[in-house]
Length: 316
Ligand code: TMO
Image 1 (cartoon, helix red, strand yellow):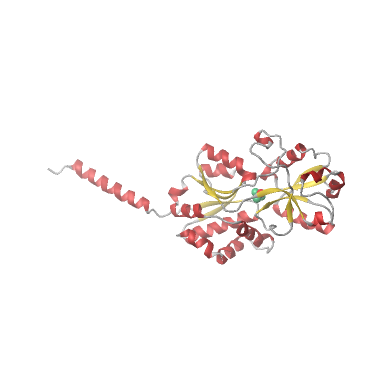
Image 2 (tube, rainbow, N blue to C red):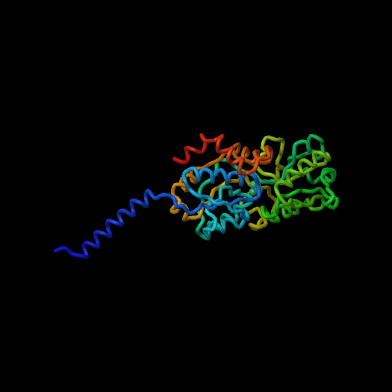
């Protein structure tokens, strides 16, 4: 005899099968993928590049200006979907903390390696303003330090650090730890643009300048040298319990995602997993804005148009 129970059971099994099959081929959700923007050029251009790639497969994206440390907690909680430039030196600790709490996945590294440290335009050494650079011990010379004084530096040589949200007190601590505090002081720039303006101003005035900078950047290959500090090792920084007598790491450039992203947007998540940019590609994204003075959006459009051979294969 036909049993209702059996019939319901069959129906359930059939719908489960159908659901299982459809979830394998599931289309990406129409809800927007939330991409953060921060305060340095390559990151913002790359945000629009990635957004453009997601849109090319029919997805929706939204951009949200975010604090570059707090963003990992936002991703963990699902308020932001991805991060495409996790720089080890500046953000490794915030990334690790969010990953360890759960909700944020390590989505792999770009091909590019990174360095974020203090340095100088090469003409500073060519002019003889600090013999012995790039070795940091050259900074122990009072004759060197005085060539880097500015009206706000109290007679000391000045290091112009980036905005304080990138490294907090890392550089003031390093300067003290290396015994340079009597000769040098750290000031914070309000923006990345203020660092590039300082390069121009110092050159015009013929005075020494030491600024925070990074690679990949538009300054790659443009005559900028990073100071060689004592090598980095895990735990050397005061925030990690160390004595602070170390430079920055030869770092990763990582990607991160909210752990639901591969389920809500499986195709976009697959693309983002494959995505990997090189040093020259990232330097070019920054140069379109900082050298060529394009808007971030226009720079991204140009980059996508010029580099289809790079990104189209990721979308398969
Ligand atoms: C995070 N940054 C590239 C500014 O060093």
